[in-house]
Image: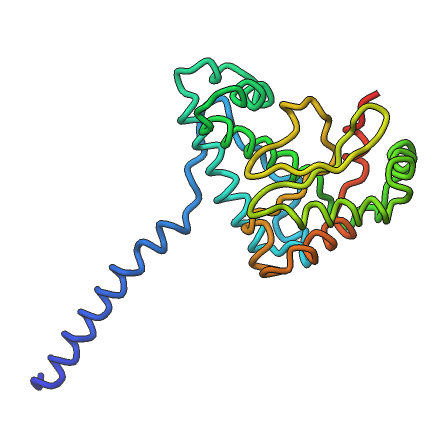
Amino acid sequence: MSIFTRRTLLASAAAATAAATFAAPAAVLAQAPAAPAGPFVQPPLPFLEPQLAPTISNRTVTIHYSRHGAAYFTALHNLSRGTKYASMKLEEVVVESDKETDRRIFNNAAQAWNHNFYWDTFKPGGAKGPSGRLAEMINASFGSFDQMKIKLKADTTAVFGAGWGWLAQDGDKLVVATTPGGGNLLPRNLPMLIGLDVWEHAYYLDYENRRPDHIQAVLDNIINWDVVASRLKA
């Protein structure tokens, strides 16, 4: 074998080794957190990951659910081990941990709950609008279905940084509310009907910085209005 050929082969092998070494961390980052075996277990999606496209792409659903969502459950499982929260229902953890100055359990419990609620709100190819009591309450509270969507879109778009926009029930009327970070309305005892996630991982791969377009597409195309109506309280 010539010196040139041997040097070429050695250089190629070294380059391949270096490439593998630098690529390894990316592969590790791509793995979803291990599912916890404790009391807080992430439920499966109520649809197949590609089915929300083009409103929410397969890739966004996969990353959002399998990485971000799973991480909240894993963190909550680890943080709550050996505490009073380990024996509580998820909703109870959110309400009780909101009273703590240490926000770690609340942040992860609230985000775990929020994401369960969020995914259950969607249905591929569902009805384009509400009916029955829900439609009547929307009309009475906002003037029309379209006005409700305008209000919910505007307020949710205006959330600074990461957070959530909510359609909620306040007695015999419906209201729009927002929460920063991973907060929700459980500590305020307001039943939530729709939750819109505007953390960037929920939409940036598909819409970049066009948050209002994402919100509009979600409200127009994939809301499961039967599930939303079932969340109304008497």
